[in-house]
Image (cartoon, rainbow, N blue to C red; front, side, top):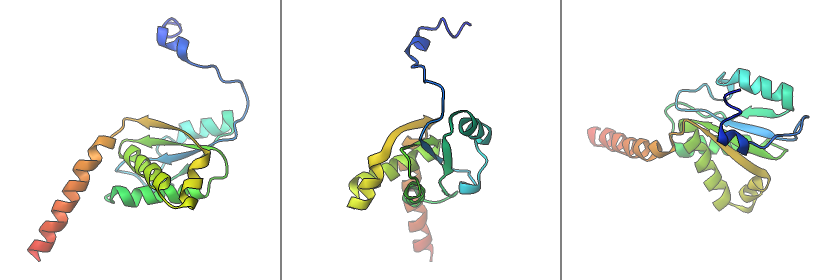
Length: 148
């Protein structure tokens, strides 16, 4: 009851009951099992049961570059046949933003993938940490080359 009195709650748009023709592309954070992951499994199951929304997990990987993981997100989107949006968690936000950027700036085929894109949801976004990780990756690679 106390939440209903909150002024921000008045901004929530009530969705009509029923199933939606929509797919969520899930991109999880740094520590993930990719497509086999179980992050948010209960929430995704409830979303499928109550709203008919399909969820597909991008097969992103731990200790891979943003570009690698973005390509994994794009590969997942290629198999989606409904309007879609993405949910990113932590580093998954950066991966999905990069995938968006690659598709929007890419080939005509990549740009067509974005024609059915509808929305994004960022959960505990670490999108701003990507630059630090990329610079750290370059430094580590240079150190390894110099050490050899």
